[in-house]
Length: 306
Image (cartoon, rainbow, N blue to C red; front, side, top):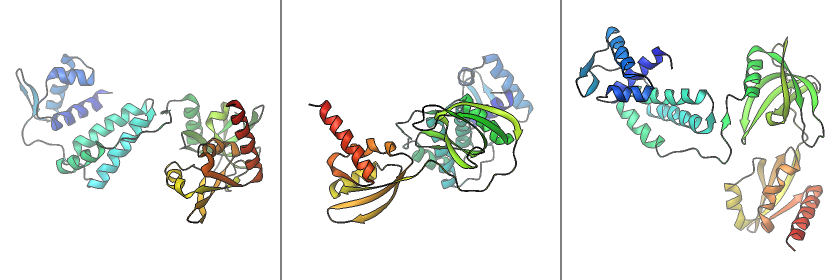
């Protein structure tokens, strides 16, 4: 944290707390007590009225305050929840920045709005079975740079179920995070169309000097889409909806006994473990190839248990 940021943070801390000791400030900002006194002197010189009370600490002169940010209650809650989500789900150099921003937003909010927002944000937490994603990942940073500078990337990409990786030049346009994985939306010069590339399957990415123009039009094409229809027993449907597969599209048919649902996936293997987790309460109606695969998998599992 540079000195300007630290001075502002100290000022916000003083506004939030009635009185604070030099040692507490030193611990909070990881600086020496001598530096704390220098910072207090600097704030005084900038016109901030700070009182030093021997043995008790520092406080702002009564009546002095930083003008509050003009956020309404819903806006404040949205900002605080967004900051909390970022701090709980990411790692890397941006995380401390999110924590600092969260503290600044809280302190600068009007008291009434801050109190209501904190009540809600303190009882909400974001938990996911996926690992935190690292925003300082070298490959992620390289792709970000390529998108910002509109530069071509040469990829060594290991497509699903392929023995070897293929090489291709792509024009990167957007990164997105879904289901615990990073994806790159890019125009593939080899396939001559828009594609989604999973970052975990990129063996190597090399930034090229060549640049490209505006985004090419065209529908994004991934691997062939498999359309799957599954019939669930009615007493299981509630739990299926609570743990719904990301490929879910719609309900096709509903009766008092069961519900038929449609799913779209890039590869059948993406949904097989999920289907098996429902046991005899889920019946695949189509495609026939998937029914065959599930039958063979079930037989293998049975053999392992006998």
